[in-house]
Image (cartoon, rainbow, N blue to C red):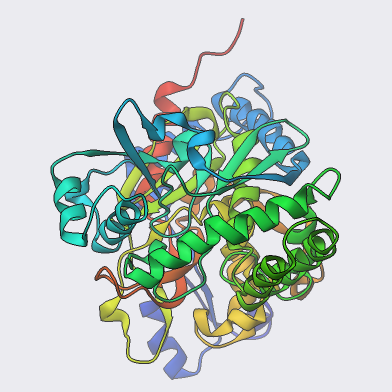
Amino acid sequence: MKHDLLHDTLGVVNVGLEMFTSSVAQAGAPLVHLDWRPAGDGNPRLAWTLAQLAGDADDPDALGSRIDRANDAAANRMLAARPVLTDVSLRADAIWPELWANGRKTLTHAGAPIPWARMCDPMKGTMIGAMLYENWADTPDDAAGRLARGEVEFLPNHDIGAVGPMSGAISPSMPVFVVKNATHGNLAYTNFTEGIGRVLRFGAYEPDVIERLRWIAAVLAPAIKAALGCIPGGVDLKAIQSQALLMGDEVHSRNSAATALFHMAIGGALAGSDFDRARSREALDFIAATSQFFLNLSMVASKAIMDATHGVEGSSIVTAIARNGVTTAIRVSGLGGRWFEAPSDTPVGLFFPGFSQEDANADLGDSAICETAGYGGQALAASPALVQLVGGSVAQAVEYSREMYHVTWTRNPVMSLPNLEFAGAPAGIEVRKVVDTGIRPVVTTGIAHKRAGVGQIGAGIVRVPLECFTQAVEALADGFPPARE
């Protein structure tokens, strides 16, 4: 190996543990440190599994070669997808009658399946608030009692083609956005943002929280539905996401530009509709004052993209990352509906005044679907405004995106990152690469207080647990179909 430091004088190349570099540095000797990690996180059995799953240019029937071809097919579906906002359903149960049918009550939630007894406090608070919103309970204590007695069933959003930020609850009478992937025809859904702070998705359920939800159902949702009715073909969400990356968003934790673009897209249409003028103004003012309004739309756009990517036989590309506040789970394109779960880490970042890391709940929400589509942590280089979330420098933010190139399958040419010379953002997290390098995908995220009712207390970054990917690699090796004759 050659390196400039070693051309004329003797020096040291340190591989692996950085702890050995301090004495060399103190002695003033030329030093090169290679951040090398053993494959399979140092587990020999896992490393051997990875070796068996590696591509082989000389053997097209090798497991790895077939996985590579499957990944190419999945990536092509991902890049070709075009999510378009086409409608608003004013009631969720118009799409999913099973949310409230034959006396059975159901609430959805973010992340992998989880019973009431295991839910984190913010998610329990969200479920209590949803009960009050639906008039299924008279008081918070009444709601908690009914939930504990099993009077309500729970359903993960991802299992019905939906996503929701943080606790992610969708109840029968809540309005939802309807997005169609114009390329592949699949539909995806999400609820409406409520703003930040003390809101339902962060576990708050006070009367003002419920009142805001009722206003969204009565004014905001009908207003946007009216605007969409005047826009032939709907609103191209992928085009907004792509442009927002050039304007300082990474389209997960920062959506200021995307929200402004969406406001522009529907403002004229709403003004030209026959919807009530005063209510139109209320709706547009709310969007203008809520910089994160586009978050839910970025999520559902990403869901429409990644659902089209899911189900490619043999593909090892991650199509969902979801967190329920207790576990983080991933789904993989070629491994069906199975969740690969591990205990969630706690986000680290910037906190609102009066709060600290000790107040933070473990990672929560479906919003990491944005990262699976190449936004958020994958595109962090696009958003210098989020520098404080990653420790203080633009260089550090850029480095996160550079790092993600090592664990993704492709680059998205319509997702340009200005700070990386307009390179396409890394896209298509690949489980073999994650386990091989030990580099865990980065997620930008809001941070919920660990106690229900407090709400959002900050924003930061978190990494997806490596165990999710090791489980998926082992499942891929066990379940891969034999080569065709």
